[in-house]
Length: 480
Image 1 (cartoon, rainbow, N blue to C red):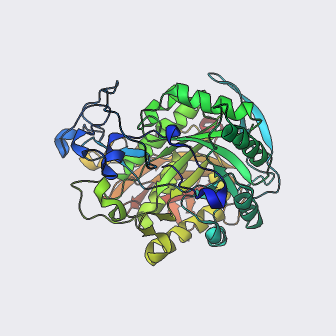
Image 2 (tube, rainbow, N blue to C red):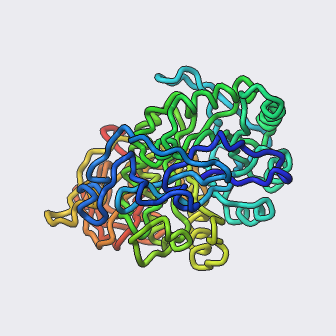
Image 3 (cartoon, rainbow, N blue to C red):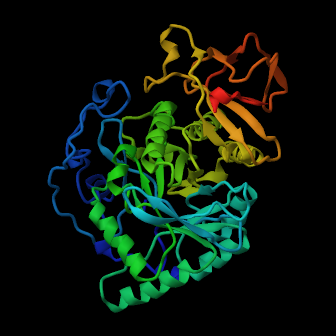
């Protein structure tokens, strides 16, 4: 969603012609009928008939139908996510800001196959740095989110915001001001962008939010990026996608690929993991990939999920499952939505706020694991023959991932680990091969128990959405 900034306080605001409004956004603002707002120009019925086996819309028209012109007198929010009937529904607003725990940004050049030479943020002068960000944080709450363990926020590219974030140990992802129009305002914004770009508190530029849902052409992003570079702003650009499969169209413009999914309670959690896998593959081995996770209650925006009931925020088990799904799919960082969004205020929901702090604390304690290298491992596991062996996206309900930790963290020593995540709301029992020889027992990280191993094979029970991490051990050469 577009950040809504007060031009008096932050000194900038995008002009109306920089907005891209979806029909449903217009409907939300009372400017058009939601019945005229089909996703990608086609309306899909609600319910099971509107989705295929992998919970995607049963049919998508890739080229949008022409939409009626809409007034731009007020600032719209961007459209987000495909609703239960396949219709585009806007999501809550994102309010920017972020940190990488250092006093100077170090950038390094990486050659991308499709995009030429790009700059991406070096993970930090601290080798165990792992990006942990959150949307919707006001400056006076920077200290609270830093104390909770976050190191990145979203915000405006003003010196006030950047200085405040830096003092709190945070770094900022900022939406760029309007550039390239050749007028006095653009010239002033160019100075602002160049100044912000040189500030150590700026981590990256937030180039676009879900452009594929908002029907924003890659050409528009190319122009925005070119305008930033022409203004002397050279820090990396980040683009957030909802449909990860469309991200490749924008690959040349995004130095950092981000994919968001907020499934609780209206989609299976496995859908998020499947989208993050696509995001990782689209980013490729060189570009950072960041997963964006749900930390809010859709009840605060229930008009955006028509026909859905029993709305609620994710609980601790669901938050933890999503976090480890992102790790299993190769995420280089995590962002959460949102600290505040519309009527949602995270600290007014103590159970959710406490659960999120516990999960973030666990990530920080296990930072070495989240920074670990994913290695090939033989697909040797058995989930039985029942339907529960597959999740909602028809993947294995649990699939072991081998991680190599070379930088120890507080609770994770150096070594190899098997990460196993139950991506379903059903209990599971899994037998699996151990990629190490002659082990008699396997420690289960953080659980104070050992798993018996016989002939390089072990088995364990998994509660709904449970995460078990086995190790450390020393994987055989065949598994590396």
